[in-house]
Length: 248
Image 1: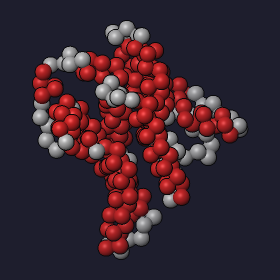
Image 2: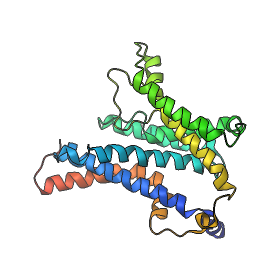
Image 3: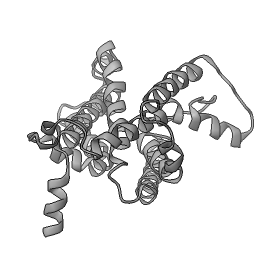
């Protein structure tokens, strides 16, 4: 009990709070998707210029903060393996539900944690002032090359590697899709920011600020991610039954 209290005091509420905001926005985003594609709500509720931009902002924030948290983790390798195992379970379940998630945000995060855990010494060799420039350059370059270049292959193994990197192949579809390019670099940018945060180089208020509600959500991000869609699915089905709308 005492160790849990100490750990709670060490946590930075602003980081947990921002993660909580990202999680709430994610849940809202998926709820709107379910309403549109299961109950026939107007498509603009889910797909519109505002949400199309916000989707990448809160997803990027979530990935960035996971990178920051890697500087506080006792073992990013263990953390990564756990998240990969959860992601594999989600892939299995969604496959049988005919809504497959082959490389969603959890797959990306699990791989990124594991990758960083195995290569941390390499990234730590980069000068601290040069690292953000490098990572931002990788983000921009990754986004451009995956948008402009369209490599294809008939080899199944190569196809798998291509869509993991960011080049989806004919017939490939994932309901949640966050490939390594450019998102791995967003995670690595977070690991750079985490150095200064862990060393308490930021203003005192950053570490002592009290944030209502959202930190508690942020601390349960993985559990919420696992459970939110089945819960939303059930709610939407119940609403459809109540108003006599058949799903799909």
